[in-house]
Length: 382
Ligand code: FES
Ligand SMILES: [Fe+2]
Image 1 (tube, rainbow, N blue to C red):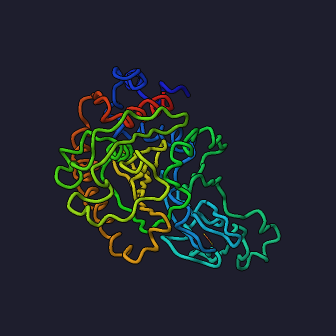
Image 2: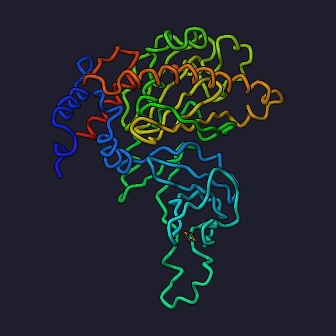
Image 3: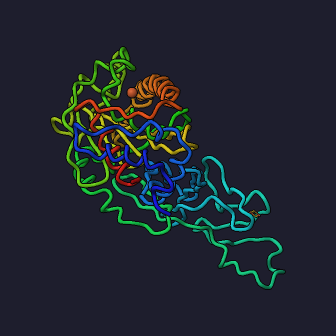
């Protein structure tokens, strides 16, 4: 079936305006932030055709440690096996489909709560009561469905579509650009999940632009951020922009005295600012002087998203005697700024929902990562 039969022709025409060179480029038409038919298309073109960010690998270090998570409506299970390899399965029993595990934890084996089928950590069915009485039953045919999973610079990437593409090509020069932050050496010290009443793209947009800072964060963090430099020209499917900060962007203006030591790997100018990067489509992070904080966004519907947030420090920082006390100020900065962003995002959603079909324009410099994403996204959807 042709695209035009799936997305209205008028919208497709408007989407082409998102691929124009700056400064002619337009933002995504408002329908792309709430219409169900668009969401259906995204599932095919964006979420099963790309490697998707799954956050940091170090959060599950011990054999049997797992996290149940959803990605674009698909229930997944991330688990570290006895050989210390991380694996990603459909969180779905091969018997009659029950969800196997919830939340986080550690287990010897994966046992289904419905009828008790049990799988080893490497996904093999090892116990299914009474099934030895079925002469046609073959345990080997009932392993968990496993997806491709890779780790790059401490980040996890999953491919949940049918035929995986090249992650190396998708990431391009990502590792080179972020080398100063020694991302492989970072340790996750807090991870949390929450939901926001907005489209998943709107959440990632706001994290990546400077334009809202003085309206939305006037007394919390706005004064920390200088005007950013131009976005980097990257060779992969990601956008990145660096800007200098007064003090550190990782703490509230009022709590700058709680700063922990800067990452030892950083030299100037990187030690004097923050880099905001967006790995298309669904993962973004800020790399500051002392820490990075990462967001994975996944749609629950076209109008609601789930966000998973992690904050990570160099291992040496986490071993400092005052780390536990001082890290609280970092967590507070994330929570306070996020509360302000959520108010802005949910207000934006109410405004664009069922509105006339409109497309904004981008402020040069202040919204460059958002403009890059809009271009990338439109190219995938047209
Ligand atoms: S659905 Fe899992 S054992 Fe029946
Ligand atoms: Fe913000």
